[in-house]
Length: 178
Image 1 (tube, rainbow, N blue to C red):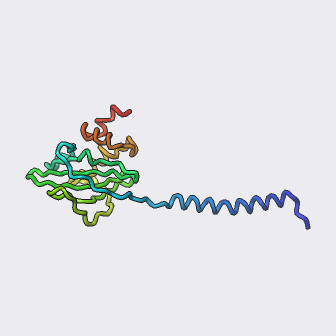
Image 2: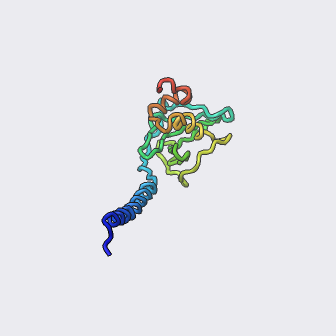
Image 3: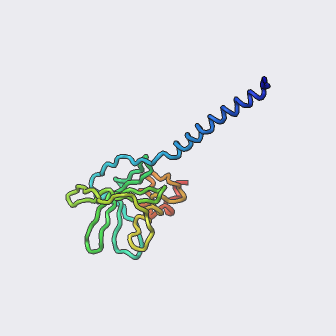
């Protein structure tokens, strides 16, 4: 029995599509399954007082929070890195080098600053969620008002972040960016 040409073509097309669809599905899975990769982190120089930009956290704390403007980086991996200096009312000072991932709302502390200007690697420095709790809300404030405001969609540059810090937040500084 001889099959008509149109049936042969139909079978050939179905066979070709049957092969192409799984290949396309594998491509989509490979493309979507690509894991996020953090770039190599280099610690910045110790902060200098003239580069510190204060930011307001809440009336619930007397601590003074500052970002070293010279250390601000927006990495190709989507992480905003910076040095934070926290000064307590009693005079204690804490210096950390940190990273924020706007896309996942996570924080990582890479290192702690020492009095001599050196850094010590933070233990347990895994990524963890940023929480907006009454105490210790400085990271939520940085994320929501300075580094990752929803209106911008993650398009902040170090220059724009420094300007937002100088003006008291993105909402206050957006006039010049539209």
